[in-house]
Amino acid sequence: MDDIQKIVGNNLKYFRYQSGLSQEKFYEKYGLNSKYLACVERGEVNVTIDFLANLAKVLEVDIREFFNPTPDRIIKKRRIDERK
Image 1 (cartoon, rainbow, N blue to C red):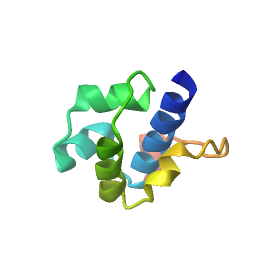
Image 2 (image 1 turned 30 degrees about the horizontal axis):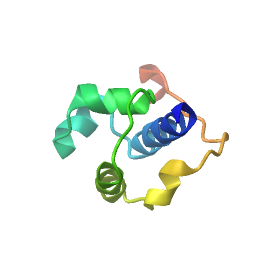
Image 3 (image 1 turned 90 degrees about the horizontal axis):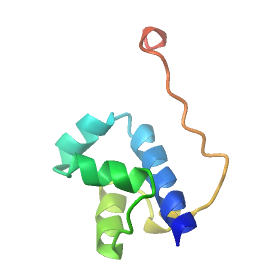
Image 4 (image 1 turned 60 degrees about the horizontal axis):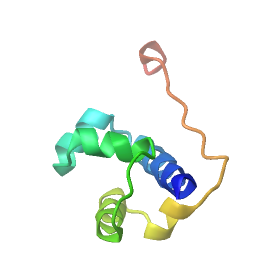
């Protein structure tokens, strides 16, 4: 079970980054609990299908994408000075 939680968490993090929102802004914008969602991104908790369905709607992705184990979804953080 641990592996699927990590896959879901990594995909959530990937889609959140693709949305261009920091964790804080993402949580604030969608009224989500920041501590809980951070645990989800780290693969530490088991989430419900309803929760994933809501996240998929917010992120405008198919819910099946959360279960995609594609290893090429690399999250690249740009330094602040590179954003100019």
